[in-house]
Image 1: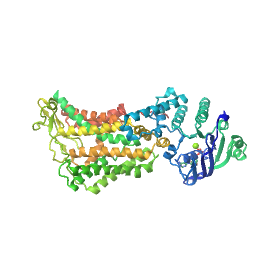
Image 2 (image 1 turned 90 degrees about the vertical axis):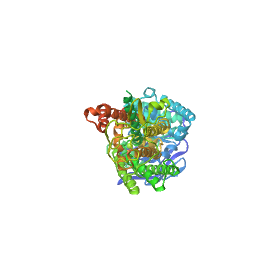
Image 3 (image 1 turned 30 degrees about the vertical axis):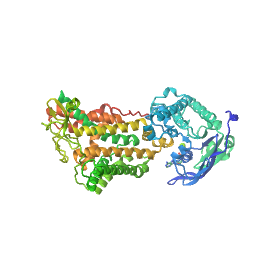
Length: 263
Length: 351
Ligand SMILES: Nc1ncnc2c1ncn2[C@@H]1O[C@H](COP(=O)(O)OP(=O)(O)O)[C@@H](O)[C@H]1O
Ligand SMILES: [Mg+2]
């Protein structure tokens, strides 16, 4: 990792005192942490620790009962999905959420919907500008397709693709929005070693080449320790550690709760 | 041979009317993945509101200022229904299983039916759009002669159908779920006779279908629509305003319901059974595919043409009334051999 060329900047996102419960289930209790511009921030923890719930709060799918989410200096009680997307937050899902009937290309094109200036009506009325715009977006999407090395499946309906490639297309759709903050929920889960290595490389490349800030949920400790700058550890909805991979690895709470012996 | 064309053209023209109704379903199916059971109620609501407004405000001739005003008010009412549906029915149900959405449209159906009748009563109204129902001779029309035909001659055969479009005949008569003896086209030696009203209705329906097809296929809302239908969460995550898309689609379906309500209402009379045109749209959707606008058009044409041809050529052999069940028989064959319809997307499931 060429840490020398990377610049970690000021705080991009700060969550404070997040409480989220579903009925009697406390998914998150008093969780606070921040994500700095340009860093790869990992969120780890055992199953059911509240990692996905945390991402869902950040992009507005879940609305925490308490706490605040400060993004780009603007504090909010809760996000809304449309607002989050418009503000440059893109994401992938733990259980792939692609448009299964559409081709790879069309799936990635949907990632650019918000970038399109011509509104619905204008598009219907002015053929010229709308068409030029469509072509420009197509070019951008082709670049992403090249970057992710999925030229061969450009026209294939994604429902037919193997799992590993679907995950890649989902990343492509998120990248198409040119996000400032990219939320990845277990992007490598269920992949074989080779696919994992590819995905790792893409995540690092996105971060380095485009300077995209990344929040990453991942189970593979090797991967997490390798690529992330800082790690938040959740357990039963509480934050139990926060720091560099080395700090976290040495933390007694973490060893007990998560990395350590079976419990 | 001329007679064959006459039947075919009559069938195609009524097919366009089926397409129109089917289109309302396709739009909503594309955007939310459910069969909107309430579409028929929306047709009834639109037609009933319009007729009642005409009476209330005292329109004298079709096409006068009051007529147009009533049209605008009815359109506004349909938009209100669309936005209300999005706000109070769909929005609370985001991410729910499709069966829940379907049940919601079932409830909506009864609500809108009740609303329409609660406000306007359940009398049967005649609706006059000011289009003559006299047949014209297509051959004369092309030859540039005066095309209005002499008095209609013998009808082709009895047609028993509560909701089929019936062409010429008595424009003032209100037909209540009855036996209609007026066929769409009438034979006259040396000509192809087609009802003027049918031509008018087909032109209006065709125009609307074309406009909507262009709008939804060639603008980015088309892509947004497919995305929303495919996966709510994913659509939200790329910033598609789910609520706007739904409101737009329901408004378009409301517009379709209005046009269908007026055209069918002036055919059959504005009455409760208008909401039954849902049943006519079903075979069209199965043949054309639930997700395709082109499918709705082609499916409607196929159903319209084949049911008339079957009625005329096969009907006498096996005893008539074929038109009633033929579309469903055709739809069943499609279900067996091509369940996604002619234009539908094949569903590929990976398990
Ligand atoms: N939509 C939901 N409805 C009810 N409970 C939920 C929902 N989402 C998450 N939970 C609960 O919140 C807890 C944390 O889940 P999750 O965030 O998915 O954990 P992780 O991603 O760390 O495995 C679990 O107990 C889970 O059952
Ligand atoms: Mg999870």
